Image 1 (spheres, one colour):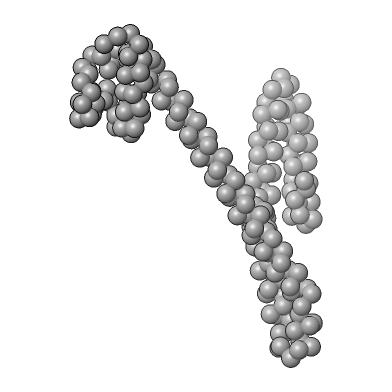
Image 2: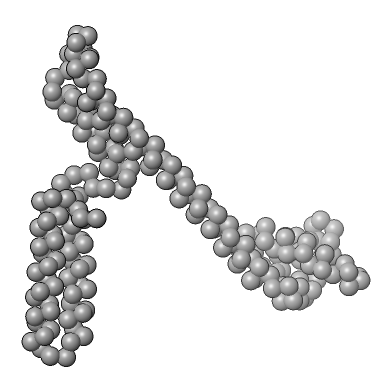
Length: 191
């Protein structure tokens, strides 16, 4: 085989290698190539693999494919969330704008029905936007943030050499975190 044919053959064998999937081996490449009439020894496949950096090339292809798949997934989820938020907002708007009109037409909706539609819309919109939808969820989110902040305060206080300075830093930081939690629990998250 001429030197010009070697890179083309190596590239064709690399494609076989890539298409074999996660359980691929170099031996499998030489076996599969033989099935389609391309005779190549296992040692030649090994040599091509080293010379043309098949493992690195494959890792690059896998990483690129993974990144594209992740981007597509993020786009899909973002589009879905946006659509759900719009639908949730539409439920809220319907409840606010059409309840009186429906009642005037003889459709009997009581306040409980209107509030249920409005709350369903609000929950749908908040859920789609990744926001807590219940008081319990809101409390958990706020407490998790406070625990993380107290951890940061603790780490910062531990860096101080003097015991009194450490105690003061920790007490002041913990108090600030607790004040923030109280604000969030009564007024909602601070952004």
